[in-house]
Image 1 (cartoon, rainbow, N blue to C red):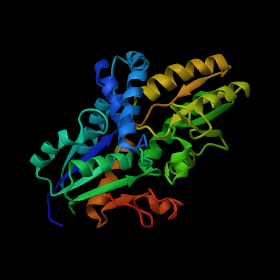
Image 2: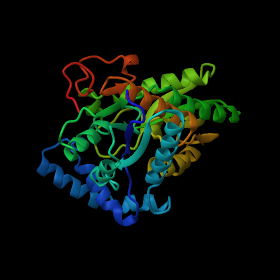
Image 3: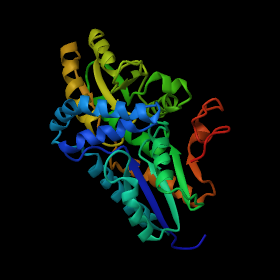
Image 4: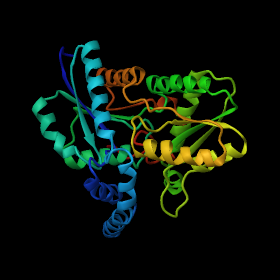
Length: 349
C-alpha cells in the first residue's frame, strides 16, 4: 500500500431540522423514505404529506424546548473533527471526514462536490448508527447509490458495530458512574429507538444487535447481577412496535419502588428523543409514577473511547481487503435475515 493515501470518510446520521421552518420538510423527507413507509410511491407521497402536516405543530413544540432546532448536526460535526484529528495523528494516510445527513442538510449530493475536490484515493461510508437497520443504514446507502450510481471499488462501507469496544466501553463507564451515585434499588432501562414489529419480523437485525450492544455494555460495566430491561421508545402510529415500551417500563419501575437509570443504546448524539422525550417527558412520567430517582446518562458524542473505536474500524477497513466491514463475526445472524447485506444471497450496496 502506498504512503499518504487520501481517504475520504463520510460520517452520516439521520439529520434534524435546523430551524422551526425546517420541521415540516424534514418530516416529509423522513416519511417519504421507502425504507420508512413501505408503500407504493403515490401512497407514500400522500402519507408523507399528511403526517408532515399533521405532526408539524407538535414537532415544533418539541424543538422549541431545545432551542428551536436539533443539535445533531453540530454534534456530528464535532465527532467528525475529533475523528479526523485522531486519525491524522495516529496513521500514515491523509484523512478527511465529511458529514452527510439523510433527511436534512447537508444532504449527500451537497457533500459530493467537496469529496470530488478532495480527490480521495478511497472513500469509506461510516454510519453513526451502531446497530444495522434497513430503516437507517440501508436507507442511507440506497441514497448514496442514487447520488453516486456508478459502482466504484474505491468505496468501502462499514455496516454495523453493535459490540464495538470503544462504543460499548464509553457507555459502560457512564453507566457505572451513574449506578454508583444512586443509593436506592435501581433498575437500568436500556432504551433504543423503536421499530414497527413487522419490520423486525421481516428480517431486520436491529433488535438482535441492540441486545448484543447491551450484553457487551453489561460485561464491560462489571455490575453485580443488575436489574435491567431492554426497552424501546419513540413509537408513533397505530401499529405494534417493538416491546417493552420505555414509558411502560418507567411506570412499572415506579410500582416496584425502583430508581431508574436510562441508558440510550442506539443514539450516539443528543436530539429530540433524548433531550425532550427522555429528559423532560419521561422524567415527568417517572416523577408521577413514583420512581425514587431518575437518571439519564449522556450519549457518547465525542467520548475518547468512542472516537478511538470508530478510528480502529476505519483503520481495519482501509488496511483490509473487504469492501464491507462489520463486527458481524460476533453476531448470531443467519441467512434468514435477508435484509442484512452480509448474509446469504443478500442485496449488496
